[in-house]
Image (cartoon, rainbow, N blue to C red):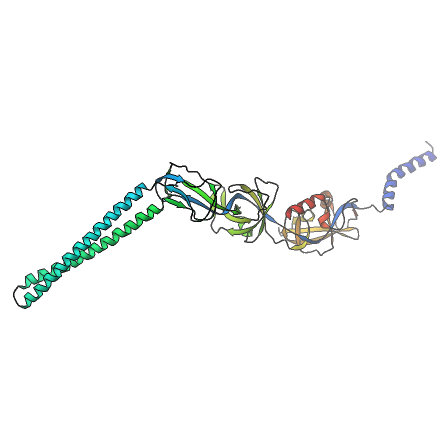
Length: 408
């Protein structure tokens, strides 16, 4: 190969190698391609996940205070009832007999009092005669003392009979109260939501050792709440008044708005740890049918949604310093080059990290690609990726928009 051909081949090789680079420089496409967002105010909504069941806000389980057979039931499940309405009647025969027995005992006490009063009147007259006779020295002192003692004894026996009468009246009142309990009255106005007992079955009272047979359950169905179990590690972040989205099992994709109304002071101990009961009052729309006992999952929002200076979570890089303290930084776009900025963060959610120090509104922050973030060095030339939305952190990706809507 002659010299001319050699130079021709060398020129072609150089053109193939250097040509694209030169063209790229002419077009201004030098540097690492990156995605950019602008640091700005965003709503940050961190959440705590909890699960539990729905319950009517005001519901009452009715149990019997007596042992008796059910004689009649005046309502059925689903009926609306008013406070004081007779719902169910127990067989009163046993308690009617008790009332008759106690009334007889009271009458006996009254007769005994009448007898004691007659006896006392006789003793008073006898003692009056003895007082005159002892003054006239017609009887001895022992006879006078005996009559006086008999008078005092008659007075004591009358008091005893009067106390027995009061006791008999108290027992009679108790028997009548027991008799009144054979009619089960509605303690609140509401709806009968459960009626497990039937006519002819025996109602038994509830004790600490034995759970009594439930007669029925009445609830005010106009208000419903979620009773949640929150892990002890998360309970410190829950406060009364926080908003929540509740997803009942019957509507797994529909968020029912609610607000934290009550937080238990004592935990419930379970096999896997401790949990605290948190009550969330729901604002249920008219087109949903929620029922007591439904299971539900809940997102409790831990902040009030105040806008804060924030950037996407994927832009924050964490690393341990020489003192083993965790430090965070981001990469900024400055005049087409990478600039490392140390930051401090506050609250965060699945999408945003609050920046409390190190950035100002309007700073252009590099969010990706992840490979580029790992390889960046101070001063590296940069090129913004084509087709990426520029300027608004909230519009950096479609996935981010979906996350923001859900947080709302």
